[in-house]
Length: 337
Length: 246
Image (cartoon, chains in turn purple, cyan):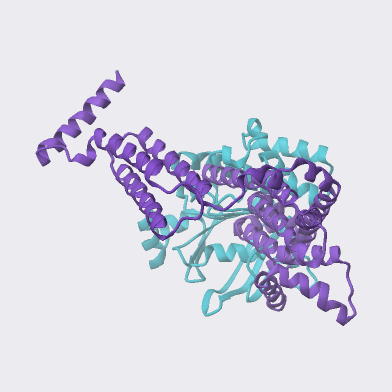
């Protein structure tokens, strides 16, 4: 029974409109939509130039077609009375039209796509190097995460003592490493420090740069976690005779960890993505492995494979950290209620 | 008063927050098993006074003796002093990440180093006493305000303190929950606990308090029995204040 009433109300809205304007505006008529769409399709099929790089006049016709398509979509999208289904179809047809135009007029060699980008034979040849690169990336990410957690947590704990001198140094540290681009930091550690008598291996330099950068963010995350704990919690602990270390260990840290985990996971994911920068200091991690195999085999397939691998790794992780954040917000709302 | 040993002695206590002179020289004595209520208009320094006594606030000057020990002396371990004084706050301040029983066990196990088994037994006995034995495994957010405050009292008692401080224990509670908290406090008073209570619960004070300190602008303006303060006080500010809250 729900459907007839809804269609009734929509016809009554339409008839209201009719009464107001005297007659239905022509762009609101379905016959206009279907007619103009078929006109656009006919135009594209018969009047657009067929293939190759178009000349000035042809280019004008292509642009005109795109404009007409956009105007058509605009009319449908701004009309509240048009059904959702029609809008969905419009979105898809625009994408299909754009892809079709690109396919038709780009100078890409479509026949060789499979050989160039999705060449399993090449990926197989590159496989051992890629696996090695993957492990290096993982090593960088995990070591940087551990290092940043330890340094960041310590800094946040020291910061919570509220000693002005200590705070000054911590603020300088945090500002410095947050402002410094990771790639610059890597270059400095790897190429400049040897002149000061500190020669670190490439991998160690990479871990150090990533870890130092991330630790600045981690310390801020932990600090926010500590600040979220109410003063009363610390007073209650003191009143029970807990010393500052016990208060930190038994009362503040367990509570802070709950608040801190979602942003912390988000930070680890971001830091893991930054491992790709380590390719700039000759570390053969996933990206560098893909790049070197691309050059060696003269085929971009390994690089495409690496891209897909990054997506496969990081889409779930970013989703996961988003999920954690959402869950924490919900549980906080429950506490506040 | 069966035992007249002095538990708390305060001499010329001053407290300044930067430019603000909150306590302007408070001197008083509290005997063992005495229940002292602290009353006064807001901003008179009631909470600051009680918080100075276990050094949650550092006094600016003056002397405080707890069981005859000068707790402001430099060699004093303030945490040791605090284990002798239980404190109950207006906002309960239970640890939200721990269940009721874990809240109670935390300090005895970490500060007094008693075994988990003994701590559990002691905590269960205390929960029984405050009437919440069935809520041992509930988290604070699952408890009502009155229940939270009773757990907070049990938590303070778990350290087996000689003295209990209550800083407006019922001010954050709905009227129907005030009774259950006051009942627990009444029982403690009867059992001979030395108590200092910042509160305006007239019924409770009349019945359970031995003395009332009336604070105005950081000074004790009156010190007497509830009967004297409520019925025979000559002091203008006291009469004015009592007239407002009744």
